Image 1 (cartoon, rainbow, N blue to C red):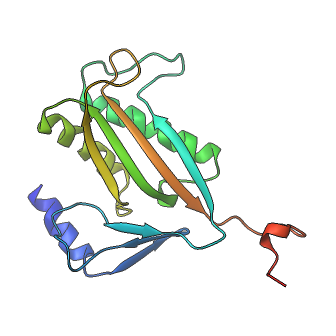
Image 2: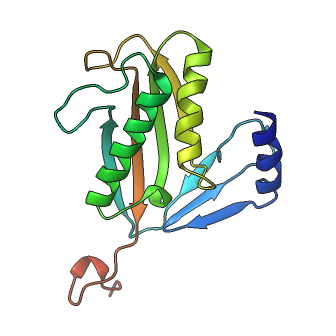
Length: 165
């Protein structure tokens, strides 16, 4: 974690980072301990994508990496990337996440979080990490919710894209 804080303090010098339609905002008034931006915005006209919780399921609907927080987080991220791509977006378009971990042990939450956090690279979106009692599928330990924002190219004659009269 110590290396992460050093990297974060270097990134913290920039107040707003642009990635796609998403602007990540870091507060100079709040602690730099958090490994994510404290807020994010997207401009008017952005198409918002609300993703269902991404679960560690294979193509047959079976839970993978049973008992392995990191393994389940990795599969959930993989499935999140697929859902984003199917919606015309990528992790760079994510505006916020919520990571749910079925555990009361902080070290289990941190294990899952490290995988999720690393998968986003420099795009450190506002995130909430929560320990929960149980998740929906048998043997499921991790779930990732996300919201993304994209600016679609205008299409000719699209009334939603025309300037106001």
